Image (cartoon, rainbow, N blue to C red; front, side, top):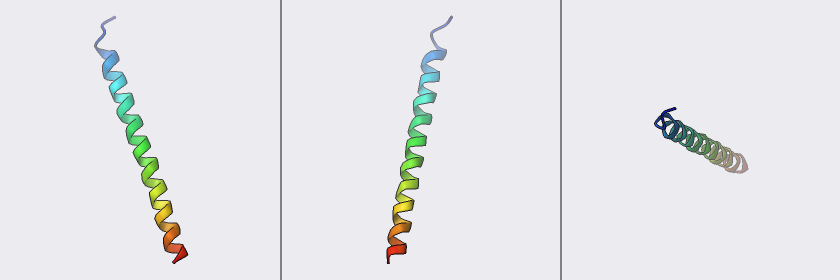
Length: 40
């Protein structure tokens, strides 16, 4: 089995994870901003 596909797969997985974490953080910040708007 060639060792080349493994690093590519891990790179894709890590980038996908970073994207998902960023999306969650963005959603949380959006929720916080909406809450502050509701509070005002």
